[in-house]
Image (cartoon, rainbow, N blue to C red; front, top):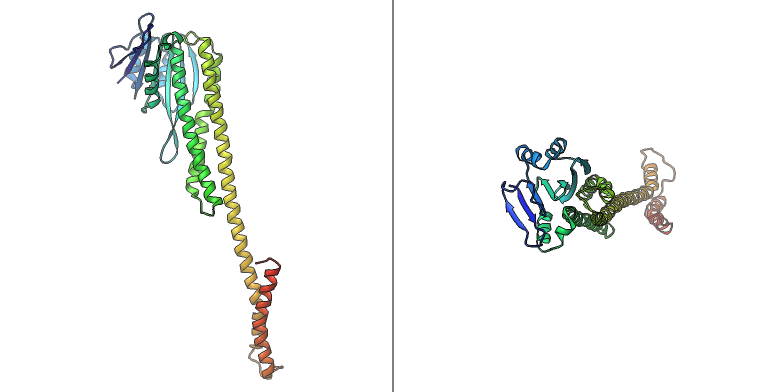
Length: 317
């Protein structure tokens, strides 16, 4: 069901309604925000003529899976941004489509978005919103979404640091979790990287729905998006370093095991020769005396001890 928020010129209180009654251009001096969750073609078609929405923008609005973009049509802007959603398996993106025209903002999304509710509460207690224009309302939405994205990226970075602590603390790290985090970071970069250019364009775009004062606010959102992309790259580098360190530890552990096995084989190699030589089934074998037998037994006992001591002094063990 559509939700409509009207912002009068004389400040709060704003008028909030739900339903299809106020899906029309606002009266002069009134700002109107229409929020649509789980849209359908019939509902968006009813908005096309009253608000002069372009058919291509309507078509894009019905096709979720869009990359972040900013498109300018006669009379309105069409903007697509993504909010990161931290799921059980990986990060997903909640698309928020928006139409901006003078005095009117229409937002369209499929999944519930708590950030939009926070914006409604913000403008309900701020009597300066109307004077700043409808572009400022969209700035508040973009700012809330960017802050939510920062929280998700911080959770991903903390999870990678926990795996790093487990690795260097002697514990076996959860590799499936690490690979899942790397996939989440790749998805986050795919969602947020285009938004950097999007908000850079909003800071410079000359449009009737935006004012020069609003462009300054979008510059702040642009800085947040740039920091978010830098955070993604830093987390990706950290995840790769943790993975490299894990494989390095595994290789070192394998080398230690092979070194010990090789030393053990070297210890028993002379014993194998001695016992093999004197254990041959030949009559009249030379050196056949009891004294030689005890010498060989002593040699078999002393040789392993001597070799182990030598390996230890040479730091081969």
